[in-house]
Length: 297
Image (tube, rainbow, N blue to C red):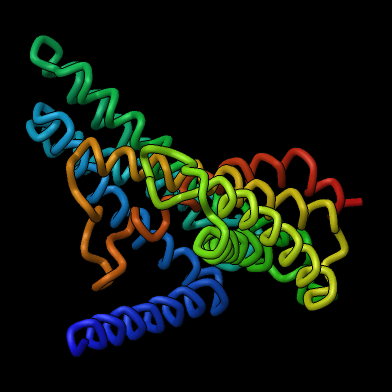
């Protein structure tokens, strides 16, 4: 019993610290936002490369140029999304473009230089990593900048951090509600990849996520675009669940329980952000194809 109590205390304490760090990074300024997701970006990359090395032993032999070049290229893409119209944004944007070009050029140079000995699967894993790790956080920076069209926000709903907050909160509510509903009425297994998930929990969590986010966004934040609230929360619930299964599949292939040790009792970066990794690009696509028109009208 004492051991279980200590485990609970450890998990609770690390969860509190995690929430505080996330809130400070998300809400303080554009720079803390960038720093937060830059740390998450590199953390996810290190864990991804570790897992892939366990899945394919040949990936362990990739050169340092390719291993770290792709991380810098992805980080450069994130920096390039900084709004050029805000103080300091232009310099960071230009720096990001340069870093990204250097990173991708180093990978190309490495492939050409070692063409005869280059492992095709290793290169493929590296490129897939750009889509799986770097693209989502690049999209996250871009999403934050959508509300930059408001020079003087008229309400909380027009603050730059609101869309990322809605997305992240949707992921959290969906996971929590799916667990609660599944615990009470879950009977039908959802996937062999994650045996604890049930159809009842998954569907119930998604419905409660959409309802909660829509009501909270409309009444608490005075968010004007109800359609956006519904779509963002729905994407987070559906695609986020797929992201959770994808990371679980990767861990199963690597034969590990957790992707890393970021938080005692909670796993690593990929364990914490697996749902967000897959959901963010789809939310970004929705925002820039449909939602931004609402703001600019």
